Length: 60
Figure 1 (spheres, rainbow, N blue to C red):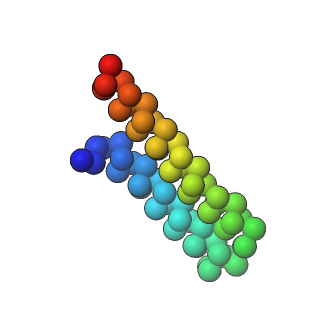
Figure 2 (cartoon, one colour):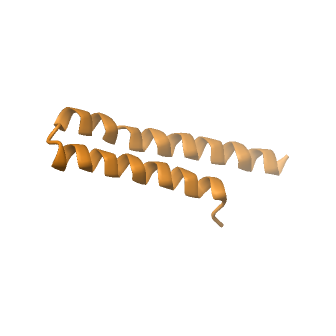
Figure 3 (tube, helix red, strand yellow):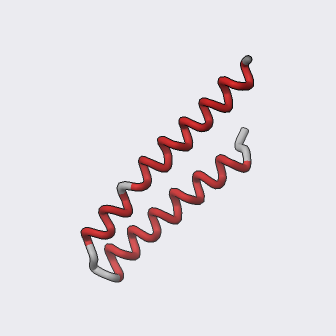
């Protein structure tokens, strides 16, 4: 069900989330934290795109 690439995408999202939380709660830098949090949907979007491309290639 999950491939190695899926785990890398989830890992990238988790790293982005933890960096954002660190910036928000520890560094008290709200602007940088929000900027980093915006990466999360972008990473998921690229992951979904590449996953769909791979599935489309498998059906050919």
